[in-house]
Each structure stands twice: as C-alpha cells, then as structure tokens.
Amino acid sequence: MIPSATRLSQHVDRLGVEHPPIDLASVDYTVHQPEELAQRFGGVLDYMARTELEVERNVLELATLLPDPPEVDRRFYSQVWLPQETHHGLILDELQVRIGRPPADTNLDRVSAKIRVVGVFAHLPPVQDVVRMLYYLTGMTTERSALLAYNRLLDGVVEMGEDAVAHTIIIPIRRQEPGHHAYYQMAARMLWRNLGSWQRWLVRRLRAVSFSPVGAGDADQRADVGDMMLALGMTDAEEAAAFAGQVARVERDLLFAEEQGLAVPPYVTRSFRECVELAVARASNRPGEH
Ligand SMILES: [Fe+2]
Ligand SMILES: [Fe+2]
Image (tube, rainbow, N blue to C red; front, top):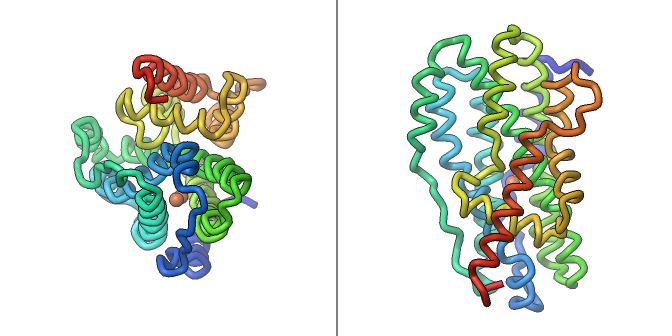
C-alpha cells in the first residue's frame, strides 16, 4: 500500500491508543542471578537505557533542526514516541541499578555545536526537506537496531531463566518499537518521492559522511556499541555485517534503488565494524576489566 498523509496520521492515532507508555507499576524487577545478568548484559542495558532516555535531548535537537515540522511529525515525537521511549529508558535504568550497576550517564539537554550549525542552514526550505529526510532515515536505522538488540537480549535473558525481566520488561518494550519504525518508513517513502535529484544526492552524501549508530557521538560511545554487539553474540565480521544489512535494508531500497546488487550501504557496514574494532581495542588496553 502506498503511504499517504492520512495513513500516517491514522498510524499515529493507533500507536497512541494501542501503545500507551508502559505502566511503571507493571514491571517485576525480580532477578535470580543479578551478578550474572550484570556481567553478561550490563553494558547492553546501560547503552539501551542511555539511548532511550536521551530521546529527551533528541526532541530538543529536532526543534533546532526542524523549526517548522509537519504537524503529524510533531504529534508523533511529542505525544507517542517521547513518552514511550522515556519509559523504556526509566525501566532499563532501574533494572541495571537493581542488579548493582550505576545508572546511565545521560546527556538530556546539551545540543551539540554541530547540530546547531546544521540548524542554521536547515531554515532554508529546500534544505529543510533534506534534513527531514535524514531524520526519518536515522529514525529507521535506530528503531531497527533497537528491535534487533531487544530480540537478542530477550533470547539471552530467557536462556538465563530470568523470566520476570523477559516478560515484564523486554517483551513489552520490544512490542513498541516496530510502530516507530513503521512511522519513519512511511514518512520517508512519502518524502523521498517529492525530493528533487540534487536533494536526493545531498541526502546520500550526508548519510555517507555522518552515519553513526544512535548515541555514539564519540569513540568511547562507539566502543560501547561494539561491546553491545559482542555481548549480543555478533562476534565475527560476518555477523556484524548481517546486522548492518538488516538495520539498513529499507534505506538501501529507498536511496540506492538503481544500484542493483548493493547488499548494504557501505557507510553502515563500516560504521558498525568500526564500533566492534573500537570495543576490541579498548578491551585490550584495559587488562583485567574484561
Ligand atoms: Fe524504545
Ligand atoms: Fe523506538
């Protein structure tokens, strides 16, 4: 079905009705083996908690980058996405504290200089559409990687017999992510159709030079992403590439439709590979910690 403004708006309505933020009182934090859970998945919980909580800053960034968004975007990110993701973050952070870890070190309100600079140019209408396209693409890869991470985390906690965590935390959180991805996907497909060729060119260029996993602004945070991938079993280059491929599938189909045979946009594969390399390098520089 071809996405339309009406369908997008109905999708937001449906998400709002069917997926209220998870009731914090519904969570059962019972953990049988807190030390083992912390050892195996502590880093994953921390990264996911941080990025989920940092949606608060992402909304400030959006206000800088998209000064005049379509009403449906504003409704989506302020009334559906922000409240849902914030609860994901609060729950995961509480879980990691209960198993003996420090809470996530978040940046909730400092918008980077880079974003502010882009924001200045973003006020020009043709550039605004390019920036909006980048926002949807970022949303898609972020939501897809979150879903894949939760899938693997769920397998891990089930295998450990941590049923309360599986059933009252990971499964309810995971259930809310596909609706976010669907939103960005519909919005991206609609906007892409209306972009001129120079705008499409610029989107591809900017994606290639700026792609990075969510919440991975510096080398240390990229190493955290790598640690997460390793903890979730992506221990060789082939698995990391398969992960990148799944994360960027829609982006590839949309941006590189003419390039038959392109498995994954190379900047996505490169970025995730670099995260794993940084994690391995960091671990070898800190003997005894890993
Ligand atoms: Fe989430
Ligand atoms: Fe999400």
